[in-house]
Image 1 (cartoon, helix red, strand yellow):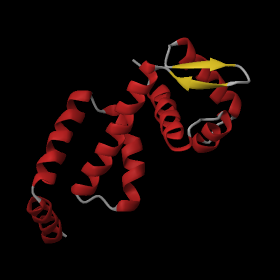
Image 2 (cartoon, rainbow, N blue to C red):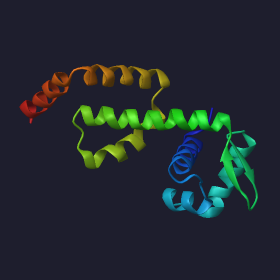
Image 3 (cartoon, rainbow, N blue to C red):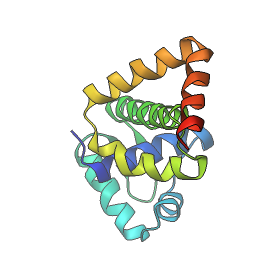
Length: 138
């Protein structure tokens, strides 16, 4: 299982490839605010652990294993954003809060949050009732 740091890289690489068709060391370094040499070291580790295939000076691509993990990590991130939005977390806090909690929840907890998000999405009146509850407690 990848470490939280590895997860951040895999998720970012997955998103970059999905959006741009490729991921470069410079893009990753800029986004994560780290030195390119740190990115290269992590890319080499991800290659060693079979999450991606890396060729020096030629770039890298996610392996099937890396794609599956990346897809699951993006799902987790988006689910947590939806959850925080539903429960009324201010929009400007959602991204930072997701980044802070996503690595600290078990997949069992993520699945239960998914059940709760689906419960609220099934009936808009449930979300409205929760919003009313928030207003009543302010």
